[in-house]
Length: 359
Image (cartoon, rainbow, N blue to C red; front, side, top):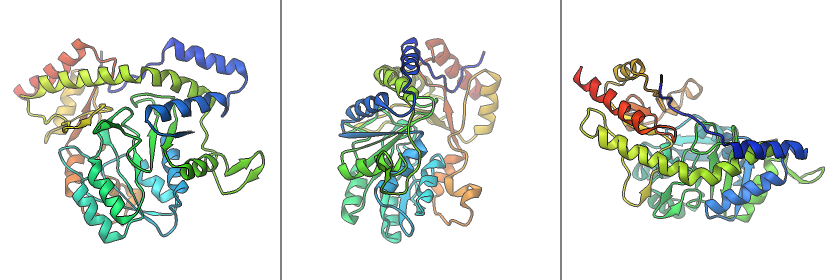
């Protein structure tokens, strides 16, 4: 029996709501999606939500809504899923990368400042990696000094807070993913949230073929819409999100307590930040050997991410100085922390790593 690295749970209530949507005949974008947009925006304590087909579409649409395009430059982190930078490139803009803080794995504000001033960037896209918010105050100060917008990539951070403020409310616009492994899911799906009327209106048009009326298209756009079935699942998942987060945090705390005296480095949670543990990510200089050991003991695990974005073949030729990000990519390893992890599962994960240390 293996403890899986992820285990999405869809309740009977969510299934019933999907069935009701199917019975209604309004299965594409419709009233269910509008309700989900409003409820998720309220959760993030912002005015507007725009639901999308996935998190990558949300990032792309948010950048387009800001007018980011050919000739522009967007600063982001090298340690993230490739979609972060791909969305920038889809607009015609160029991503530039600043190194990470090795304690949090997030964008380092000092490195970001150096890179931003060197490259004359047009926007900043911090990523709240693994569910831990970026140190946003200095990022906000930098954006203000340069008079450029912040696009939060909050794909992994639903419910996280910075100084008590929800992730999603800390920049000009923020984007979430509802992929099955995330803290809440719609199967596939994403969400743009913002307080800015102009971003809301432009993003709403862009994800719907640039449409302003039934067959009036004011701008070039995509079909990035969310289905009503996905929204139906999302509304129920959103109701359960506080419970999911509480369980993830409890599991994380118990894992950290049990692994403190082992050879691995456990995650940190700086003062004033609330980590929601999309991933419980440890660090070890013997990752391959530990992975083999965990596999043999039935402990699910995965590496998020084994290469920095600029090291991917699709990014050949991009010169980046990010030794801390590159070092982390060689050593990070994520363990099961999802709500289905039981007390016995936690103990087995801890015992397995303790056993590895004694071999």
